[in-house]
Amino acid sequence: MVNMRLTLAASILLVFLGNMSPAADPGSERAGVDSSRMRDYKEFVASLEHEWNAATKDVDRRTKEGWVKRTGELRQVIGACSAGKKDLLIYGLCKTATMSQFEEELLPEMVMALLDDGDRTRLVSLLAGRSLKTLRGFCGIEWTLALTMTPPDAILIIGESYKKATNAEVKKSLVEVYAGAFPAIRGRFPDDDAFVDEVGRWYRENKDRLAVNYDYFMHGGPPKEDDAVLHVERGPMELYILDQSKSTPSGRSIPQSGPRGIHGLPRWGTLLGSIICATIVVSVLVLCLRRRK
Image 1 (tube, rainbow, N blue to C red):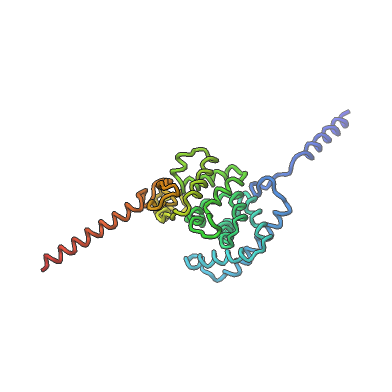
Image 2: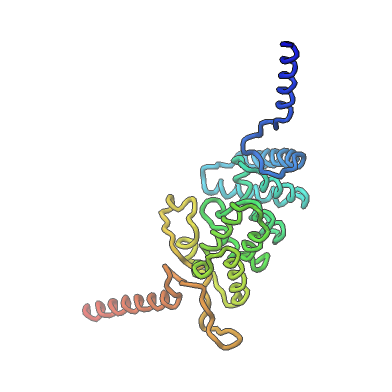
């Protein structure tokens, strides 16, 4: 009787243990991962890292010149990959939950390499699957896209990526990028979907009259990783400014998305201030010369 009970208990224990899932590698991969493809990705990433390190082994990583050479070399290594290998890199970068140090360096250069190629489709796929607010810690991705000529209207890639994304964290990150670039529109559209749609509508309606606000780089957008090191203070500022001298086809003035120029001042205000300062300086110099005579 005792032996029967022991046998029964052992059988139940074996069934229980057999139904238990094996312990997961903590945070190495996201849900819905193709294990075979991830193995191919990891092997390929290891070969890329080896190739990159071999090509830059004599480069001093501590200098600015060395950093530029290393990142440039990595971008070339990515650019030389076949279309299939680029797709594999995008898949792995989006599915890896916790990236290695090399993958952290690979991600922004992957973005830059795709921009070099004007590859909108793959760039949308990458940004729809991986949170990325800054490139290399100090340059907002929205700033890079605003300055990019190919693919055209690259700033809209943020919105396209948002609509394709399924991960809540990624969608939130993309909205925060847009909110930093278009704070006035965000103030009018608190709903995320409506906000992204309005940014796209406003940009398409006014894109022929838009100019990049160069004060935005140092004073606008979401906080950047290196802001404290660079002693940078950020506040609400628009990524684009509009030329008010031009009108819409209906003859009406163009609606601004929000404040522009230095610390929210219109560009004409900044220009007028510069002219006044220059006039004062010239007047003082003329007065001093007259007194000497």
